[in-house]
Image 1: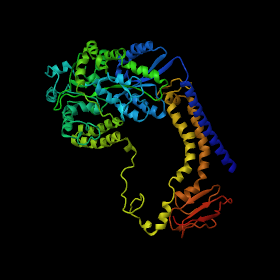
Image 2: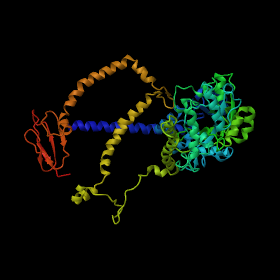
Image 3: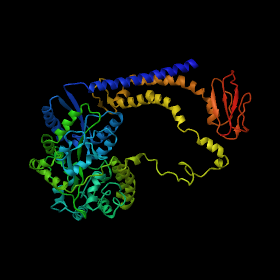
Image 4: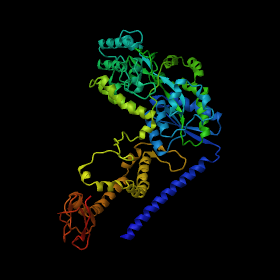
Length: 627
């Protein structure tokens, strides 16, 4: 038995040492590779230029912009990896945790703080040689979106905003010759649409996140928080904020906004419902022209500013940033690409594809090349940015969760916004005071004269009659058990948990074991192939047979444990096993007879059974004092 245990420990230690050696060797290889003087470096860029059926932006990047950069910078190549919008954020999250990120990322403005907080992005101010010069040319309102904890972790790459887009034919069908310019005019349009029989919705949108709901709150004179973004209560649930949301809820309950706004995936998407004449108006961005040019080439919408309320016509700032990750292979090459993104050669071609320039000096050229951007430029003058906090995504989820019942008429808008504000407050507080993320919460009350940091508490009946036992237990080191457990848990994590997690991750990829090669994400394809492979089912069957032959025998050896501990009754002799039966009832003992443990009054006892004979007679009991 002892030799078997030593062999098991030796194998475990050898496996751990091998794994650590492999990790160390890999690190050394990476260091030597990154430090080599290779004549060519390939930078990987992740982005969403092709999202939303928009091939124009992806084509502009791959066919015009990247070739221009590579021509101007011999020895640097760009490999672009396109992803869906939601897929990119998920991959960034898992990549940040696994330490597997590309050199460059085109991120949504709302994600910068979240990933900067994780420590995976390069700080640019104070590090990038010409950062200040580049930043000075960007629209001032956009720089705040790259800010986290007093530093900038990216450069604005493109910008946009939402304006009111109208279908002239749908408006004419309702007897209206121009787009609504105010809340009241949109309300009148909804009344005419209702009178017309409901074949046309007055307005449509696809969500109730900050991106969708804030233009109405701001235009009504409300806001989501105070200017310093430290508190939502009193702002998000103010009368003016409530009025902005109530305006939409009223239209929805009148049947003039489709249920796509609360997440019904069966509803017609705005990009289809608008040109089809199903929706009279929507809020959307400058990329819609390119989307409709391919799918609905004959559709000619009109663009106007967000309908004005008591607070004016205010929309939301959108766009993306370009960031460098801490894992970049060549920092200087990455700096060169960031500088190129702020140039005329990058900004104007992307502007033609539906993304507005972030560099003020290119605005005139942009307006001349793409006249349709003029209304968006005007709207940007008053547009505001969403909350720039690490947990901005949670804010969107809170808004969706709390506002959906308000649209459905289950709660009032005031109740929904008040509940949302109460949940957003801690997120704002944590963002403004990062240390609060780790605070343990309110401390217990300290009693006068209680000594150094001793906390006041109400003694239990047991403590009141046994002060010496309490003092004895207070001197125990609470860390000691964890120190004893730590080596085993570390080995368990290295040898069992990490390989399991890593294998699970690799199962979703077409994994390439060649170092430096990329592995493509394939989702569940590997599992589909496995389930259609006869060898898989043969192996599964063999495993089942092995379990059937081995598991029952091992389970039978654990029966004394079930007898003693699970059922909490005296030990009965069982052959072929060894078990410990700890009893937790104070004031009882279990002295052993020749065959069983029977309870008697006295002290608590630990009893055990060992296979001393074919009958398994227990050898004895050990008595301990009260707990």
